[in-house]
Image 1 (cartoon, one colour):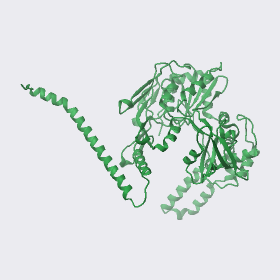
Image 2 (image 1 turned 90 degrees about the vertical axis):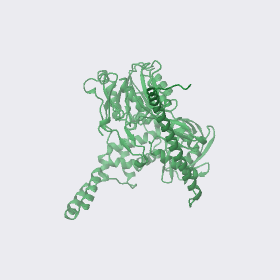
Image 3 (image 1 turned 90 degrees about the horizontal axis):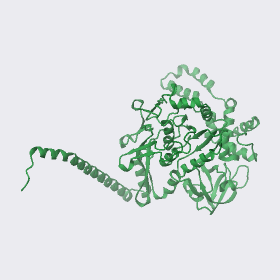
Image 4 (image 1 turned 180 degrees about the vertical axis):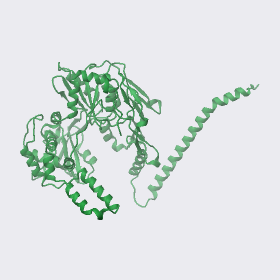
Length: 566
């Protein structure tokens, strides 16, 4: 006998089934649209490969199409075919490879050695910054792409590679056979004591082994009985692995504290991270240094020191990347780095400053989070911080101004080339923290640059050029041409005068370029400590416990950390 269902119960059952029916319909509709678009894309790809008038590279064609599609999402979602996986791993995951321990850059058709790392094969073979690479294993590198040259130089540790290069002041090309080594580019590029009570750790990236390196550096610094404070330098650190950041934070933050919440579309993209163990440095005063290039995992770190009032953040506003990427395997050993979630620091804020519009019609436009949408959050001690505005420092230190002549000399590699010239003439210099580029040396530099062609425009000259174009466009030029031309002549810069006016700035830039030629990266840090205004501010705050504690307690002016002005 068929049960009789009352009209009321029937309506209730229909209402209960309605959301499920809508969900199924929505899923089926999405599935149909995805299938349809894939079929259209496949048809276009096949037609182009089969009928296009010229030969095309199918692999490159596909990569171009995929890259264009992902470009409409965000700059962090990328596709890597099998041939690029090793490069991806080196840049985003690991810091180890087989090679010679040197970096280079391309200028025109030339590949020039830029950095030589102390203790690695290139330095032991006396390869120098400024050397121009000509051939690898007898093969000319002219016309080769940088990645092709990298493939020729890199190889299994213990094998050899023959390099041919030219050197300033040496008439004939030089040849060196270098035994490749296991190159471990450390996450921590330098650590040491700044004075009897303040330690320093410079962290360049959050790749594999980051936590262990910071841990070991901190343990070594703690062997100094007078250690009371630490400068933790994250300037220029573009981030890396979130898990390494979380582990590293736990060296300073007590067990059980909430550190990061990760939220995405799927259950697998969601995660909550807490400090899991007792810290080894729970009470040491910390100053975290950031700048506009401190991003992602650096902002997780700095943001949590700030949110938990565990340290004072000093420098400039950070980059503002609050997105989490995950590597997804694809067919034929390809991979995709995909943005799967946003992260939120301990206070609940997201530091992401950019909104990515994902429609093809707007070309993947990017806008800044407006002030009106920024929400306030509270640190552990009740200070106000804002989301959507990156990590704004507790103590802001303006970046130093760079003169136009300095920018031009750096951009045209004239200071780099002069350092090569100087290294060829001088076998040694004073210790890194004592070296001074003398006035006589500066005159040699002035004579050197007079042999080089370079020019630049001052901001005043640029503004005048804009004014002149506006006057001409609006038809007023004829009536005031004499006055304008006279003004223009008066504004023209004088290179000789600028070399005198900006002598101190240029001498400092030259010293920064010369010191690593003799004392490598360690020497460069020791030199920079003498001139670093952000470091000086950090030492000021750490050396004044009353000021340090007032900042962390949010007393007076320190209550609101700042809503940055666009």
